[in-house]
Image (cartoon, rainbow, N blue to C red; front, side, top):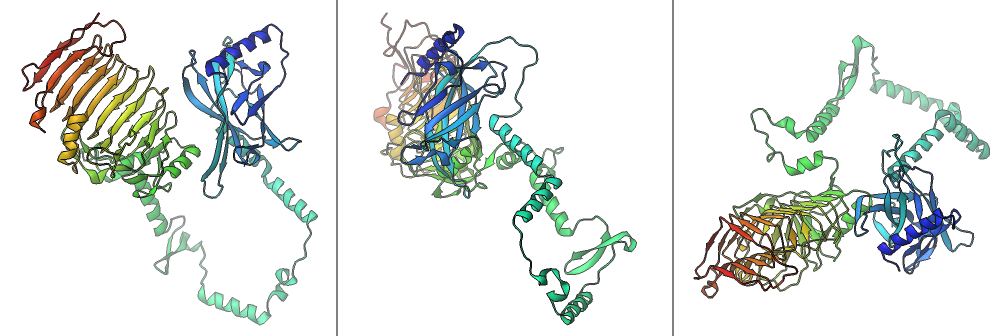
Length: 618
């Protein structure tokens, strides 16, 4: 199977042949191989159009009806998912689009399904390459539960450049939304009163029925004496008032009848309306002018509810008592199109081994009660993700965000004997990921990012992980600030755990950080800050207290340390008291090194040599 880059080059070659007149433009079919999951794109179809086109090109697909474990794709909803690719064909960029293939049908042989993709203005908005895949989804119509999902690997098409004519068409909605709105228009067209009357008359003409006389003849429906008795009883019990009596009308109140001005709602209706409005406007119960309403007092769960872009996962059906695994509910929510999920305070169990990947641009937000720098954590006022599975629960993608979540591993041993994966990871193509104000209790590794030329923003996180923040690859223009890691952030900590972290833990390990800013704190680790092969990075006000080694600069260039402090010793064990504040070496040097700057830093150690400097080998 060709790589994505090779497929792109083949697309360009095919377009050149079209330009040379070697291929006659036809509507050739995209064949899908269910064994390799690849989409075969004919040379004549690799050109999708030019930018500013809209609804003028359609691509036709064909795929075996039965795939995998006897999965019948004709019973599934078929979508084409597409996204722009960058010019270097190394990452995907922009918003993900989705088109619902409504014309799925089984071919004459009964062995294949056929469907098409109309290329909207969203697809052809900009010149460049479009990566796309086909996904088939089967969902229980009653419960909304995802039953099966089948994907292909991505293939590629080309959008060529054209000049602007000043009348570019901008799509108002995503493809799927536009399709649904079009369906609503059709429904409105066929449900006019005249049309409905015609449908009813046509039905009764085609399906004549005989009615029982007692249903149409009042004299035969009931004996006359019974009818008279019913009328008499009714008149006795109900004194029907006239709504013209002094311009008032009756309404029920506490079992009686009262007369009110016409148009006034009942007490129950009024109370319901007022309560509903107050629920949506909590600020109405406080005073802004006297400063009794502040941002912090305006609770995060109220803010999330008032912002309709977030889905309340408890209202959606998630168990927040920690008894039932929640990953299935999360998948259902995302498959329904929700990408921003709000978890109110409570306990959410991750136990069955599923790893949830945040959608591109998606977010998870919880409730937190943290005291930054004070080592105070209100553990009863948090959104807890209780993790008992060994694989990590959350993986981030491009421009995704994770805030106000507490991760807890209740089965972890005092010396981190269970090899849990990091609490938070990301895909290698991720950029602009945000992890803010999270709490890590007994995490073996809190955050581990392996990105390529991507920026990350990791701020205000606290906890007692064995390893705090691990950046395995290159990060550019990143911001790692106000994080606090140390064994004292766990109220249930033991001396055994604190000693193990002091002898084995690394709070911050950053590989290839270019043009980044780090300003965080740690206490009681073996190594506080470990920078590997980094350049043009600023360590601003970092603190490494009670660490055996405060800072290691390994193969770094132009790293600037300003106002950093380190106490290169441990209070856990006298045998570890001979610590080092700063070590400079080049065991990981990958290129010719340059100078580092150390300005206004304070180093304290019980060791005679507070700074160890190993000469670089040119």
